[in-house]
Length: 416
Image 1 (spheres, rainbow, N blue to C red):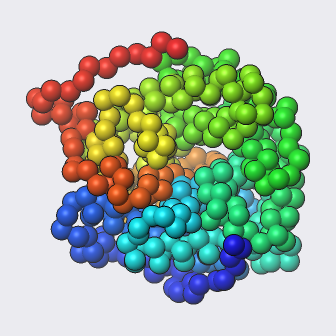
Image 2 (cartoon, rainbow, N blue to C red; image 1 turned 90 degrees about the horizontal axis):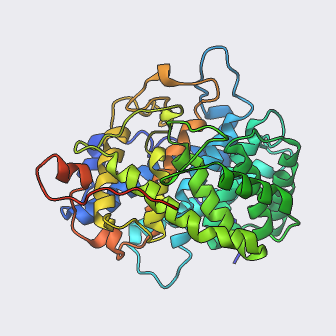
């Protein structure tokens, strides 16, 4: 069923400006329920200013553009905000399309509201003449964020992809196709081209097999061992295996693997490597709920945990990491980063920073829209509240056990 009704946007910063105290006061006494309520509040806090403004045609007018002095990201930052936000909350929106799941009534109401706002926002973004008609071709950056938007469509086939009206769908296809004029860098960027083609395939449009084949085969060559790929030919000590490479590689292969036997043959190896890297991410979370600020793009905050979140969503966590353990560790990280002072400005927009507002860690390609990639750390919201990820009692994670003298599993390298 196509959905275009625009549920009232309300105040653009209403959820974003919500105080930490008011979030805490809304928590139920049961810690398991409290974790999900908290995660939902974070999703709403991120989504509210972006989706209400874009759906109303006021995103360009109202969204501040914080950036490194001397850079000019205004022409690309709005698509960044849309694509990155939806890539993270798409599984949560998709959960609302499953009528067989029993929902908390208030959460279900909010999820439906944001799903319809997202459909309206996408329509505004791809409709010429709209005040928020977004840039898909000028500069190189739009390829990146068309890919994140494409990832959202892959992650939410019913609520987002099938929810599009036919005219919006056609315009979206043209917008995605238009990014082919952008040459990807010889790095993780190859997967951006592949992800766009995967979305075009799912949208029933012609797609380019060569762009997909080049990306997946090249990443197979860039595999360094023990669950880690190079970002291009070289190894980089950063979080791009989680921010981009492995989440996109998994979903491109899962979407298009049946179209080519060589791609299908890679799928199992890629999943096992992803489980290994998810284990590394979980072991990187300290007893206090921190992780090392290593490498570039640390302003994406808990988006650095996207692969751990994705493996939880897929119910494919590595051996030795239980769903409750992953939830507890990730909740500790998200709380530290989202509740740090000045993480949001006075109108509810995210600021540049790792823990709070730290503009000094901004890079030339980072602006307000960029930092909404943190939403990808919320992927397990796509699991129903009855799933063990949410319903099991809290558990200590690996470092918390290790540093408190408890038994914990020894770590082992992955050899394939």
